[in-house]
Length: 290
Image 1 (cartoon, one colour):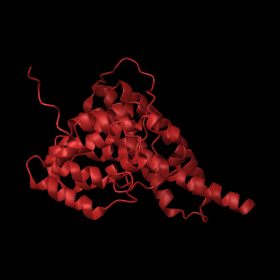
Image 2 (cartoon, rainbow, N blue to C red):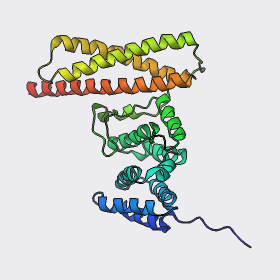
Image 3 (cartoon, one colour):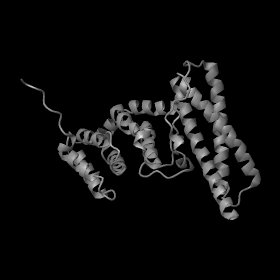
Image 4 (cartoon, rainbow, N blue to C red):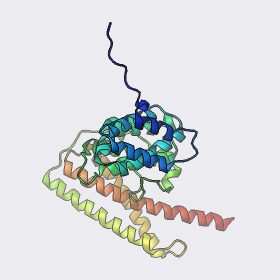
């Protein structure tokens, strides 16, 4: 009786074997030279990108070895930067970015915060596109889905190569995937959109003012009036961000959703900046009191 061929082992290909060895958990750190060699092998053949992504999928699937996941994320980052559209077009598909990467955010994997942030940074960065050369429709859907669930993404100035720590890193609940309360969807009228955009313009102005205050006031020599204004703006922006998250769950207008996402990112960045300053001040106060 004839049977179909057994599925090919993703680590059995030339590039798959290299990926398996380069992400082995016994390694102490990334072997960047080997990573670059893998990129060259991927680019050298027609099947290179497909074989590489299959191997990366296998390495990330149900893997609770944090060392191997960290090495694999570093290799993935280098491949995205060096392997071009043929490789990039595969990792932005849902069967990779959602089914393999986002799945690792599940609490059962207990990933360190910096690794969670790195995955979220990948999703956020890829959703913004690869200069029009790659269809990012699916990863954009994943990004929006996470935003609607209330996931807080890292600051936009965080690089994919190595996310910087932030005050939010100290609180794992900041990365909760628990969905926000859902309700009926809403298609805004032109009048409603105009009113909303006016509110978003106000939010953008508040972001600019907060950013300016944060840049002009050096920790330890802050202007009291600026700090009072900063605190008021912080509370206002927090309320606006909560409103935006509610709208992202219900609004159907695509253009409005894009604008809401952008303003939410701007708000998130400036709020994180304020929290850094606030935590610095608490640290100084603690040191002074000791």
